[in-house]
Image (cartoon, rainbow, N blue to C red; front, side):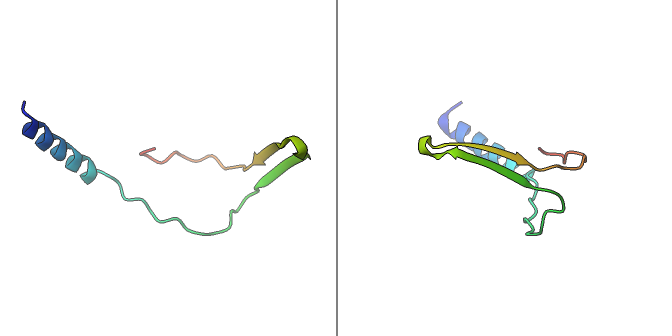
Length: 67
């Protein structure tokens, strides 16, 4: 294979990959219907040590295809 053949093959493969891509839906700004909890322990600020806990409970649901 010469260089021109390799470049042509790469262009064909990249075009084929782009044609199979799924369209991503736009994000929607809306309030989260559940609980979001964030706890920050900043008792050791002098040493710049922070402890953070975050809790976001979710309901079970099927995982979307493509991830």
